[in-house]
Length: 231
Image (cartoon, rainbow, N blue to C red; front, side, top):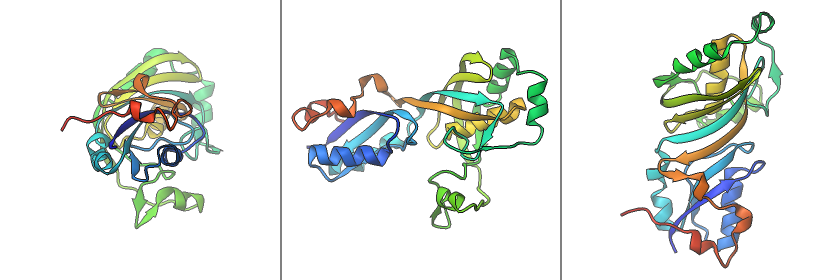
């Protein structure tokens, strides 16, 4: 049976781990997903089950995505998120000593990220250059020149601000790295910053509220959660 499953990915496993678990659960080998989530991230993963569904994953993959995230100002990490080693940034300490940016300053900085723009993909990413994934080079201590990609930030809203922590919601085009957005926001504020938490809440018209947890799916009930895309 072909169709799509909406999965609420938990923290600590990869998107490929989700696919592997579903292969074992369903007995179906042809399974894929529409957009990777990092292991520390949670939220919506759209999974195609069966040949017909996996062929249509590209239709979903290019949809805009919505995330809710937490960032921490005052530090920069090698991976641009909390999983990486903190690195020093020239000028960051003096800016923090002068006081944290005001909420108005944070909102003004976020507004500058709205609309079409160029974004340099992070070294710790699965993007390939010269046939090699960037994170494989980064783990060897190598850094290569990355060409900026075209992205669009449709909405970038501050949800709460308690320095050095802030929470935000972003609706963006496919291919946008939210951890790079957090990193670049910290740079724009003069403090540095990194992504601490990330949850994907929507892909196009699909919502995480309609997703199933892996532990709630069984060989007897998973087919009940399948849905079909309009032909």
